[in-house]
Image (cartoon, rainbow, N blue to C red; front, side):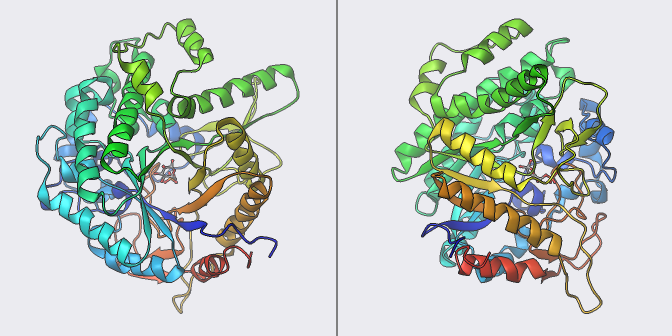
Length: 485
Ligand code: BG6
């Protein structure tokens, strides 16, 4: 009973359209930024930097390139066609909730159309209806690294204010089309990731920015996303009065490497910068320390006269966040680095790492939950957590993944410990409950799932789904509401 979670705790999983659906050009869908993301096999710290390079030339070449092997997100795991089978497996595990995203380009192929593509609207209606039939509550992300490529090329993505209107139009269509099916909405996935991968998050192409003003462009685009998030929060509340709209943060809990006050100060700044993105959406205003930081860096954000009121009056109802690892900060440039998909810190000798160098830190999740609740006092849900690993299929087809079970088990125990300390956590969705294409490297072999998908990095395989050991384990945890941990 020690680990029994609160009644009605929402256990489940989380997906993003661009990493699972495939069918990138089916039924009138337009190209999104994800469709030009190339497969990378290397995973060293330096490669993380390299693979983020993007240019107009690279994009245009990719658009002409039909070699789908190079662009795994175009094929995903064909969830577009397999969704009924996959949802049935989630239901078998007892999922109470599933986080999915709606690909903007299925509804508005270039983003600029005035009417949505009926085939796109229909597809998500069917998907969401099937989820309801299986008693799986949907959480819908409106923007998860999949903006129309046309908006990126024409307006340099979110840098141009006009994109707000297109996004609001898209969201209004979603609210009206699915108001009877969806209560929980999320605006921007990991909105803070804009300064780590501006193209994937916000369609920003560096060469389209004024020279020397690339960073300013990023924060200008972010401002537009903040305003858009507030506007759609307002619209959602009007169209669906019982709805709950959340923001979504990558929780990058950072520890000082030593008690040298310089390390402590650098860490404080890093953590405050991470909070900034949720601060704006929860408190409805920019933190003064960020405004001062902008001033020092010469970053000037152009705001419309009404923006401050829009942000203040339309804050979110709950906080959602992803948590994969903790980071360590040091002012010493010589120390060895550890990496996340696009995040870097100093190696923490107390923590093991995944094969991709992500530092596994279950206690860090408890620390994060307590810090976030203490700061925001909002209901919270963890909408991404998990470990990427290479799985082995045995001759009899079974897949033994004790490393995954261990990872989840340790994290769940810390979630319960945080709840016992008073944190209001109402749900948990593991990342990629079925194996999907990696966001960072577009690999298939970086697997997060309880369900194995027979597909390799080049797209070979039958796409057959099979249950790993962790499938049965998670089913038991959900069934016992954590008591079997
Ligand atoms: C988060 C993203 O940053 O991390 C997901 O919201 C992503 O889209 C997840 O898949 C894990 O990262 P990766 O690179 O291992 O897929």
